[in-house]
Length: 56
Image (tube, rainbow, N blue to C red; front, side, top):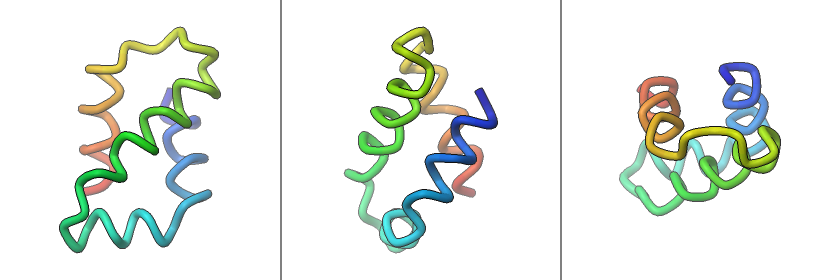
């Protein structure tokens, strides 16, 4: 799952910056993209936590 998260965050550097500046809405974009890569087999709640960890 970490590889998918890394891939998505690397794909959207501008949105990562926007998130860090306070635009929390882009989190849904990251979760949605990781879900696509995982073919829907990921737990969205757990994904949220993992993505937030990576964004710190």
